[in-house]
Length: 255
Image (cartoon, rainbow, N blue to C red):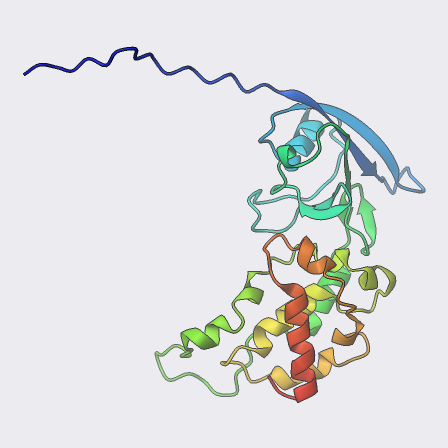
């Protein structure tokens, strides 16, 4: 058997090596022991296009200034701890690729707004979690399930609140809300989203309690439907829609 020979064949051309380039990060710094007001400080770092802002922050902390302070944990967009403002928008540093930003200009990084600034990129999250706890974000059922049985729920009933189960409590939505910036009493989008998750859960019996809580003057009626929260959500939750659904449930008096 003869073997066919391909004419004009050539070996694959090796890919060009990926080159690093200099990126300038301008970070809003604040040390409560030294600073009366926050200040901007710039850093030049060698990065690759596929690196993340979190990688750049790590490189600055490990190689240039060990005092740079920020939160991070899983580095995969699950824990939500590294939410910050990047070029004026709330994002997760671990999910923001350098190539997706305009690298011809400096990249501005600062703490999220509306919460007390503690140091550099860290804010006090307690007011955020206080609102979250106030909406009672846990299942409340009046009857126990059958012995050795789960609480049965249809696929359609589960789909009713599926979107709002995705919240990772990063506060990106709440701290992007202009109402929250100016009104420290407003529950904020994240708390309402987590209330929504249980209000529309067919296994839960405390929807009316949560609706009463959110019918407060600092509840759902403070939302001005600017869609900032929806745009900021790293999980793609339709937050403004969820808030509208809670408003409708308040008006109906039931879920």
